[in-house]
Image (cartoon, rainbow over all chains, first blue to last red; front, side, top):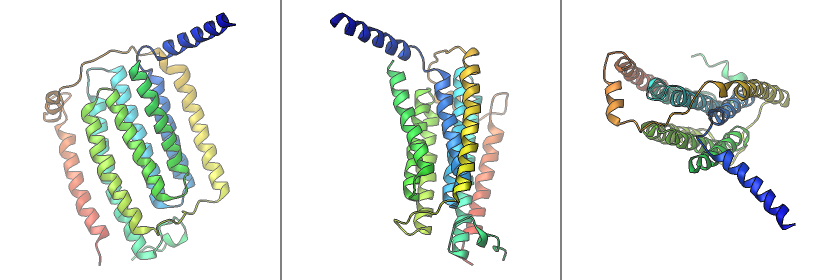
Length: 125
Length: 167
């Protein structure tokens, strides 16, 4: 009985150390960013609130940035292309969020609601 | 070893927060979970040895964008009121689309990605290299997009003031 338990513990310990040794595999990073991106897709399609839609867009942008950085680090170490693309993408995303929130606050001032439904269509003038 | 454990902790936090951010009822909670996702992404950048990118992510996203979000939420919502959802049919279609995309991309990543890279440890980038790469016009230098970003930010400032001012 003691020997069996000892062997099971040995096997589990070997499994854990082999699982955790070496660098983090690239698939792990890509899995995280894939889940982040498709959660953003789900939120974008299933929400009616404009701020929620904007949160989902931020999630998708963030997943794309993470992918750029991971591919740069793993496939082209020592170069900086993905790094700079992510840097500029963060700047553009901040600008886009500021404009979107300005538009949303303007809509709220006109129709007292920020839900995507019928009363958004009569926003002219 | 320690790197791997830290990575899996951060990945768990990110996955939990990102799913909660798109499924929770209260919008302020959604914004808070988005903040956790952005901070976790900054942690991943730190784990990949891009320290400057981590600082930019925290300063721009977790600082600036989240303050904008919270201001907008508090300006346009009664506190404590649940947000309305789409119709259940639309939610079902959205879930099917997201799960289908997740399945396809997951299949591709799981079966194809591990064939083409070798991990190389690298020393940390010096800030000098980043500054030289950003302030030059040669090959692999990025002065032109830097200036284009500055013009874009100016246009966004003017556009934001024009759109959101009182008439």
